[in-house]
Length: 117
Image 1 (cartoon, rainbow, N blue to C red):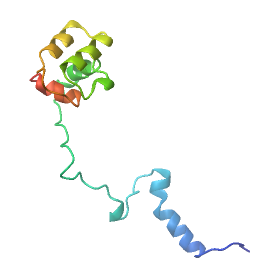
Image 2 (tube, rainbow, N blue to C red; image 1 turned 90 degrees about the vertical axis):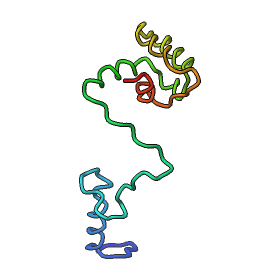
Image 3 (cartoon, rainbow, N blue to C red; image 1 turned 90 degrees about the horizontal axis):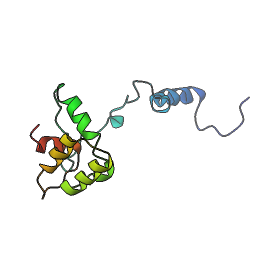
Image 4 (cartoon, helix red, strand yellow; image 1 turned 30 degrees about the horizontal axis):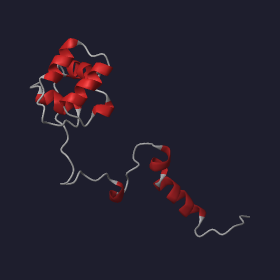
């Protein structure tokens, strides 16, 4: 005999547990209902960066190692200081020096594109 104040039956308990299983256990199929679907980005949100070609990825990754997170968003001076702190090689420092002085960059990908790559 169950004691307690159940607001619904055991069958409804099982059904409710099944509905939230994907959320609580992280298994696929957790977004069964339309209301649980992820919403697309809105008009006021930034565009997603473009996808890089496979041959660009290692160079961008190498370059990005020398831009600390604390330097972003940042201008050329802030980026240069971060790169020097992280002991960037001369070619990376030269790339940073070639950036426009009056522009602030929010991501490493923005810097990469400003370098014309």
